[in-house]
Length: 157
Image (cartoon, rainbow, N blue to C red; front, side, top):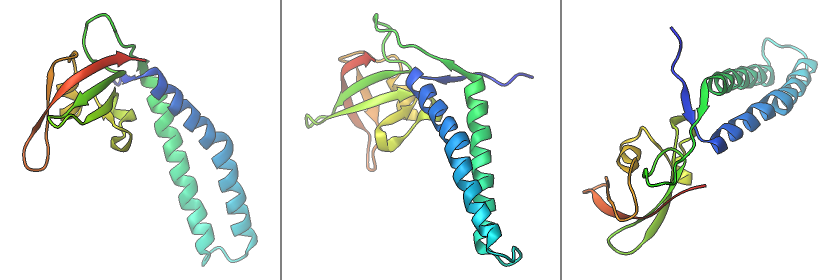
C-alpha cells in the first residue's frame, strides 16, 4: 500500500532540501572527522568520544532517511488568493480584543514551528484558520478560556 503524500509549502520543501544537503555533504564529513579522531585516541572499548560519535552519526543518518522520505512523498500546495480563504501557505494577521496583532503562517505538519508562528494545518488552531477570510473570527484556546481573534488579513506569498 502506497503511503499518502505529504503536503508542504514551496518554502518548506526548499528548507528541507537544504537541510538534507547540509546533513549529507557537511555534517557527515564533520562526524567522520570526529569519529576518526576518537579512533586515533586508542582503546575504543572505553572511549566516550567514540560512543558519542557513533550516536551522533546514527542520529544524522536517521534524520537523512526521514528527510528523504518526506521529500519523496511531498506535494507542493500552492495558495489561492482569489477568495478561497486561508489554506496551506497562507499568512494570517489576527487581532485580539485588545488590538494586539499577531502574524501566523499556515503550513504542513512537517513544517510546523510554534516559535516561528508556523501553525500546522492539522492542529486545532490550524483547522480553525482554514478557509478564513478577512473579517472572520477565530477562537484561540488559551490557559483559562478561549480568546476570540479577528482575521485582519489573509495573504499568500
